[in-house]
Image (cartoon, rainbow, N blue to C red; front, side, top):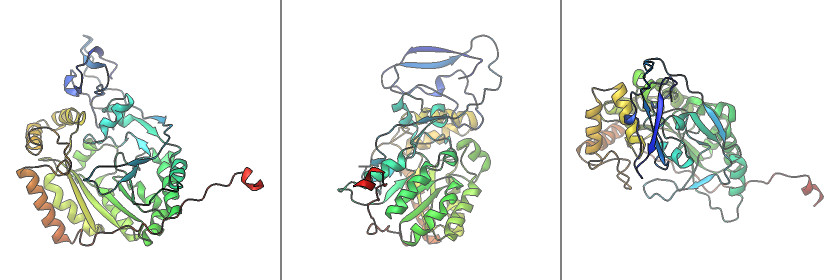
Length: 379
């Protein structure tokens, strides 16, 4: 991980995730959320940084460059069977996310690929260059039945490398051609680039966008979600989408006890003023490798609040860092979770949010046209 330390490698206990607490001293990598690249739960060996005696551990760690890997996936629509999620299909143009949000519940998905949920997740990004082609093929199947598609459910479709690879835009072009309804969740202002596609779709009731805002505190945001758009910039994105006639909502997610929960009403208020008509929230989730990564981040950046934060997290998750049960995993349980739910309901009612829930139109869908090949000209 750093040039000034050596790594020891030992057999890992089955099923035990390795976290940054095993390292000698967490390092802060500029522009990255994680301070660790610990092995995932499927790896046979665990790695830990140790002092090699050279006395250089106080030097600045080297910058970590983003590595782009082409993903030769054979399908693009993910079919969702979770009963507590309001959609049954989604598209993720990328695996891993350059935004580097330390709390991201999708980090453990990188371990299935043999990578770490830490720095690998935010610096080794898999791009799906054939996404639009695969989508066109899957939407063309005779048995395909149209229901709203979700973008941004696992990793952000508008993360920085989208500027170059434009996979999300290509997917949107196919969905627009087919008049297929969709919803988007992002914390990036890059979604404004695609207003030329989203605007006409919105006029036909085919799209809604949610902008995720965790905190207005710039100091916290820079460390919590280092490569995402600044919170105030996200408010401007809500305003611009609203002005373009695109239904837009705000996700106050995740709500982090002690650290950001006190900002919920302010976020909802300013988002409503900017044009948001709907809102949602998720209480902090820390599945699998995310729990040790997030706790290490807390102790590195907010050591005086770390115990308090984790105490309330566990109180809200039946004594554990995470609760994977359907229906309670997003909201939590107990006094703190109930208080957040009540505050959210009072605030959204007062602000007129969620008064009219937009139902996306599925009746306009038409199967995509197949590209004409040279051989078709002779048939």
